[in-house]
Image (cartoon, rainbow over all chains, first blue to last red; front, side, top):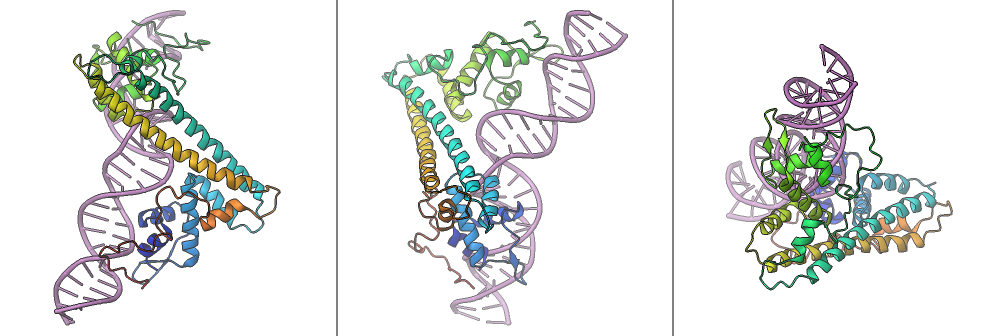
Length: 157
Length: 157
DNA sequence: CTGGACCTTCCCATCATGGTAAGGTCAACA
DNA sequence: TGTTGACCTTACCATGATGGGAAGGTCCAG
């Protein structure tokens, strides 16, 4: 089976299949005399596994671990569950963050008339930072230089 | 004010300030004789605006537009609101997708005993794709070759 | 005058994916 | 048989937003 066929069958693009091979996520494929890669059902199975894991948002790094567990007949489902749980928390954290942003922005948008005049609470909040969640801890204008480590703090100049 | 000072005051790293300048998001900073960039309150204000927009998840591309509207005294708040609304939908879409993944994975994890044996519904679902949301439309094994465009469909070789 | 905190530019890495270009292979059809 | 065009190969570049580091210049307090 050519790489294009494998791609269609597995839902992983040919480009990605080659990439996965290059980073060692899948073993080097068999080659025909022409140099074409040749895939069998075991390869398809593995590619499908990878695609499903990607569909669940797993990073390739973690998928590598999952593949190892998959092919380990003496694996512990506790290990698998631990990886899954960690990943769930990451997903939920990211989702929460996005939701926070969306909520904050929606309340700003709700306060905006959108009647064509320049007056706009959205712009105003971007100016001042009011009602903006500051996801990256910001620091900046908020904290007044916490423990002041040992930086020279070159005063303005 | 040096770039480091501006970074601390605005919450945007020096690295990013230079990058924003290089892509034209902020105007080229004034330079002192030494070649050092020199920032004033207007610059800080602009950097703060950018940071707040980033905190709301706006892309630099969209922030460029928002900055244009910000500095346009005859802007229409309808334009601003439209950008915000589009962005809210994007954020919610992404959040929904992450949440879907998390939910799907959580139900798999809940079905996994985690008792140390190899038996694992998480691994099983990754193999078969059952209960995996297939966020990228997958196609693959699901659809039976939709309208079959006009591809030769090299049957397996 | 020296040390070290700061600045400059330039390049590289991330993560997963897509695009393109230059060239080789394969099968179907005239 | 030759042509056609769908397919394959490798290699390189791009994305978006950010961080890291190197090599070298500037500034100021002690």
